[in-house]
Image 1: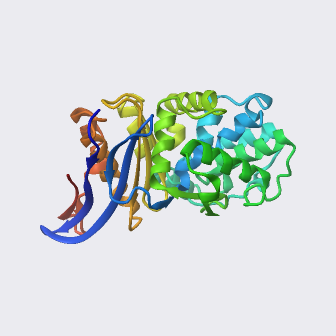
Image 2: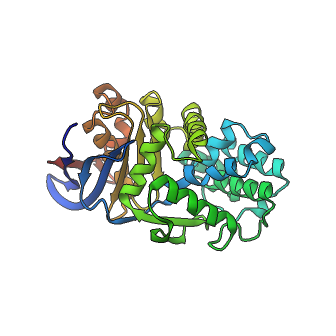
Length: 339
């Protein structure tokens, strides 16, 4: 068994060859048995999971029986786990989920926002159409939550709030998946209005290692296998064309399970690596989302999870030149990993 790698990870933004800013990074890799493979910074320090928790929230589709009752396929399941780009396919699929359970867009408790996909946003603007709740990147997750409530016979009012039985059930799921006692998980409100969970960073890594290894703790093992397969089969529903999560999965030939979270959080699972299935959790301390592409791509390559050729295919995500308004190259971004 190899020793734990201890790294210091920073992201430097340089202008004219001079250091302009530094972003500190916490990161941890664990294998499916819970062994720490790599650590950088305080991996026991807390982090909000944000949207990296979506696969855990989707477990209620299985526990409630909603998957079978409403005839949901792996495509609906993948959308429930995703932060989609707000494209026509994403919107239509979320709408069809509502139709199947006898709900409407008004029942969604996520607000509207401009699509995350740049092309999707431009198209909506060109057509002079305002975004709806279905364009919210979390509309699939919220439709799945409504479906679980319908299947359970629970009220759909306040389905997204701490006191609702659905959110208490999801808290229990997250505790089981992460290995963190529920009483030590802090709760707050996410950007979409649903409950968001705060655990030690290692809990997030542990969850992705177990998902990648098809070894989610019971009673979630079979559901976890189905979720991983659904995400692998439709990575375009997890995010969208040109976006980091989708392209990491496609370029790695589905060896990676990639999920972004807001405020500089990322969860990454690898199915096959020298250490077997593993999970990586990262947190950019200043929350700079623009830096997640360089960080995640370079870190996955350093861990041996991406080949050189695969890393080059992902170049648009990690090569971030600073270009001024005159289209001049004036700086760049560097990820440094020191052991």
